[in-house]
Each structure stands twice: as structure tokens, then as C-alpha cells.
Image (cartoon, rainbow, N blue to C red; front, side, top):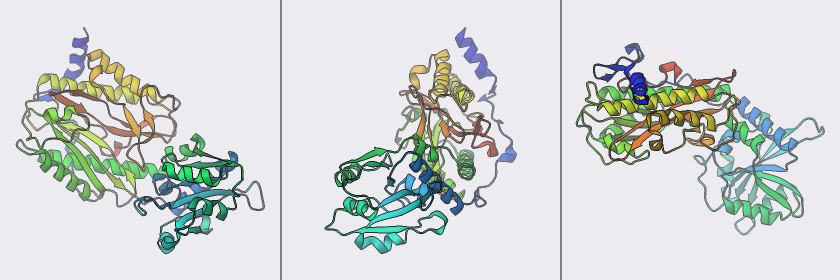
Length: 432
């Protein structure tokens, strides 16, 4: 009975070559061109709002400061990251303190950059966005000095002070140890949810960037799919995909490119296999726009491909699992619930043991970031959260199918695909 049910669902989209090949209008297929020129980067006003929100939370938490290395978090709060300043053994730190000034009710951020003395001029050249033109203070430490004691002293924090300093959770341990040694009575702790949620929940401007980046990624995949032919090598198609991502205007674009049974390894590196008529091709692609990352996976077939019927059924089951997960994603739901919904669908078809990774991850300034859609998680889905939805089936030495689209939770608490503007998720192996 279950087999018949799965087959009947698959047959809804079966056509002369298996799944139907006209899943989207041909009007949605265009020659590639820069797709996101109209989308601006994050404005100074938004950086001001982020810094104000951070200082407000620090004040509520009675914390002395927040510390981050060049990273996605320093990018979020102050407009510079490890792209601008590579990490080394010499710490450069962003330090944000809540300043109340003359009024306890008027909390404003006080931004400080800790920098090696010989790097002061370069540090001053960082594109740091500061709150309402209040400026950035630079504290420099000489090579023979202790950078952490220098930082605390420059901030007016005595060596025997009590209090909490929150740090970016990805900060390197030697920096945490250094701060703790410089202030033995201080509590050095990873930033709590009140702070991390500021970055997790995306603003309208961030969502517009993420939408366009993911749309451009889909357009690049479709462009290459139209050029596929039997006999191509994985390396050749990988190069075509990277070129197409560049032509859409995305930076640092690339794709995991796997043909046939190579896709049975979710993060396989490939073997430069030649594409056969009966192969699926899996493309897991991403690029960046204004620092925000896209992530789209399509499992596709050649026109008129002789895809085995059981592989087509697997594709249909993965598609159905993706839809089931989307229906379970709501503001207020636990992040494990969409993952559970996808697995429940796979159990109906006996394929659950082949879905070997979590359903999805948060995405934004990093390709993978908190929160995650995974079993066992009690995180709560909130408006502004953005996730990947990427169920897959991986049968070793046989076939691998993954479909991935990112979605966000809108103001009404409902999920919406970032790629709605270009037709949304894949309709069939012939209509990515």
C-alpha cells in the first residue's frame, strides 16, 4: 500500500521521459546578466541601529562589553571582517561598550578597536561604521606589551574589576584566556541569545540581499543546465557554473558538481566523471552579494535522459519531503519540527536511513550559521530567521539526490522561499 502511495504521488509529475519537463514557463529563462545591481549594501543607518541594539542589550544584561575578532559578527556590527583583516597571532579586536553618558536611559554604543601599534594606520583604514558619526577609539599595544591588559586599561576596566564581558562564540580560545588572565575577577562568556539573535533575525534590507543572491544562483544553474550534454566532465561543468555565477554578479561563487553515483556522497569531491544519459547531475551552488551568502542545490537530468524509474521516484520523494518540511516551518515552532517532518515522509517510502544529515542551517553572512534545523534542537523559529531546506537521499554506489532552497519566516510567521521571484524550488529534474 505504501509503495502504491509513493508511486501515485510520483506519477502526478510523470511525463514522457519521467518527470515533466515544462515545470516552469520558458519566459523565466533569460540570458545571464548582472541580476542584483539594484540591490544596495547595508546602509550606515542600519549599522547605527545594530550598534544601538547591541549596546542596549549589553546594558540590560549589565555587561561591561562585547568583544569580537574580524569575523561575520564584526561585519554585522561594524562593517569589517576577516576579508579586510586576516587573523593572526596578533589580536585585532572590535570592542563595543554601552555608554550611558549623562542619562541612564540614553544608552549609546562606544566602539573601540584594539590594534597592534605598528598596524595603527592600517587599522584606521578599516571601513568601520560608527554610531551617528561618534567616531571610533583606537587602543594600540606594543609588541612587548600584553594586548589584553592594554585593552582593559584603555577601557577603564581595572585589573581587579568584577563584571561580564561577552565574546563572539567563534573567538579563538587564546584571546578568551588572555582577557581572563588580564582580569581574573571578570566573567568572560559567549554572547547569549539576546545578543546572537540580533544577527540571526534578518532585517528587510538583509532579506532583499539574500533574495537576490539566491535568485541569481538559480538563474546561473538554469543557464548551465541548458548547456549540458552527455560526455561532459564534472570539472568542465564546475567551471561553467562558476563562470555563470560571476556573470550574474555574485562574488566568490562555486558549485559542488557531482554526476551519477558520485552524488551518493553528500559532500563528495567528485572523480571528474563523465556525464551519461542515465545520470542525475547534482549542483550545490553559492556565491556572495554584499557579504551575504546564497545556497541552492539542484539535481537535474539531461533532456530526454533515460533516468531509471527508481531514481525518478527518489527525486519525487525528496521533493515531497522538502514540501513537508516547509509546511512545518512556522514562527513559534521548534527548529527540530521541519527536520522531523522531512524524515517522517522518508519513512513512508523506506528511505529514511538514506537521509543522513540535518535538514538545514541558518544562512546570512556565513553559509552555515545558527540556528539549525536538526533533530534534538529546542531552538524556536522566529520571524526574520532564514534557513536552508535541503533533504536528500544518498544510496552508496547508486544514486544521490538533494534539493535545496533557502526560505525565511515573514512578518506573519509563515515561510517563504527566497527564490520566489524566479519561480521558487525545482519543479522536476528537467526544470530546475
